[in-house]
Image (tube, rainbow, N blue to C red; front, side, top):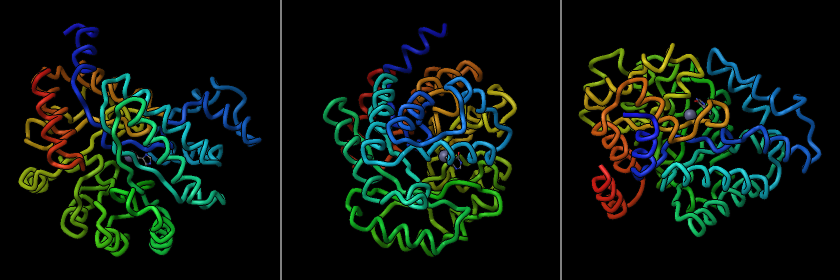
Length: 336
Ligand code: HPA
Ligand code: ZN
């Protein structure tokens, strides 16, 4: 399919984004504007210098710069502007629903009150629904390089907003920080009625994905690439229908794959895994949702049928109520 036709087709397909860190949508232009607005100094001379620094060979390279960039986010207006800019891009890509991660510890550890983060994000989510018709859910991520006590304190600090949280996740440096380290706090979150997911198998071994499934009992796996190294694990994920929130351009930028042509997405679908396509940290990885679909489809020769399956999986794996899922799935079939 020529690229224009492909992009057109994917744009018309209704899609949900299930793996998106809102701090990872901070474009260099907005970083500079917020630095000016807040009187914060950043270690870059220009927007071009920021972009030039986005050259990563592993997850930690990215995380170091991602946490540094977040220093410009101070007030609820900053979080609102950040999130609304993302929702506008999503809508332009034909995205209709997003389940967004945020990393409160990145902010509360700098002295930003939880209320500033929560109220800014929630007001942008409300505005996205009113102005763009884009629905969303909010997922609080614990930073796994910190300890479990800090995660418990974060869960407690978020309690006033519990009714507006859909789930909790686990992100940041994977290697050396297995899901088991957070088993108690993730169980406590589930007891509060929250969905539970963890990043696993991005850099970490299949054993971390097994832990996520067997010990934590996750509702979704974020990434999951390395599960393919273990046929018994693949069989288990297929049998459970576990959604994998895969992020092709992230995988490319963080050297999880050497090139997009080697990306396992097509293989995942062929194996019967409930894989989805997502953008992870699009301001850092060079493409939002549509570009993730299009570039991966070109590199792997994905068929229209496979693209439709990915869109279907995005709603089936979402935390939307069943009637809304069914409504979107019908619309996907109408385009496909
Ligand atoms: N992996 C782990 N932590 C993250 C990521 C990721 O891809 N993006 C933001 N935090
Ligand atoms: Zn992620």
